[in-house]
Amino acid sequence: MKTKVKRKKKMRINYSKSGKRGGVEKQLAALAGIIDRSLLEYVSEKKEYPPVIYRAMKYSIFAGGKRLRPAMLLLSAKACGLSFTDAMPAACAVEMIHTYSLIHDDLPAMDDDDMRRGKPTSHRKFGEAVAILAGDALLNRAFETFFRCRFNKRIKPENILASAACLAGASGVNGMIGGQVLDINSENKRISRDALSVLHEKKTGALIKASVVCGAMLAGAGPGALKKFSVYGEKAGLAFQITDDILDVTGDEKKMGKKVNKDAAAFKSTYPAVYGLERSAAMARELTAGACSAMGKTDSNTRALADIALFITGRNF
Image 1 (cartoon, rainbow, N blue to C red):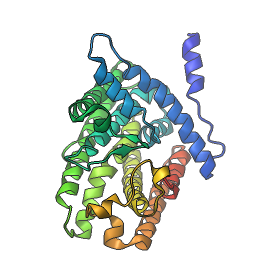
Image 2 (cartoon, rainbow, N blue to C red):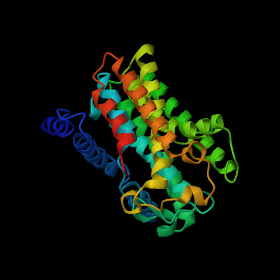
Image 3 (tube, one colour):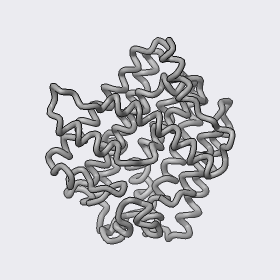
């Protein structure tokens, strides 16, 4: 009993300085700390399995990162009445899926990146075969971890199933994978503005949107609230990708932890390439305002999510 009380205290985040950039970064860092402790439990090496696959999984998942997606899941769940502790398996699952996608995106057959988060990419560290398998392992471990929620009597089984289905859809051919295919097929081509929007909504936006919606679903949010969280996630997700596109042009390579100006070199379809930097930045701000407005229309305490939307477009890494 004492252990449970102590753990809950560790998962309590102070939002008193919410709204200030430094405050948001501190809150995200605090959330990242509790997420990392749980992730370590789920990807720890097991003696009966080949140790190299666990080393590869841990290498990529603990290579850094803002833990933005799992943090958004935790915050949406909390806004709807579910504790961080209760929602943590789902949050860890989201980060595993995100990390798996990065491992595969970096492969020579895809974006062919040598650095990720300031470190050699998985295939540079372990070879292509192990990198591919590490990504596969993280995807499968993600849903294995997600369904640990079934042991929690505070979460209704139907909410677990609905949330898992939402996450699977966002990760698959109608979401992240479909977006990656569109991205590959759009290289060296001029695509329409509508096609560009669909590409980024799927490749990056879908998982961010699902992270927010899944947290609310697990908590049992009603249709009206879910619609508002969906609008928030959709707008924040697209704003995130537009900001990423901008930073690929204007960002500091050391802060980014990866090479910049790669999109232009690969003739990728990006917002700056289609709209220009100034218009792209304006679009990101408009989307952020829309995301914050959606959170302002809920009955829950969603201030932290609104602050994260502002952080997304104001970041320099």
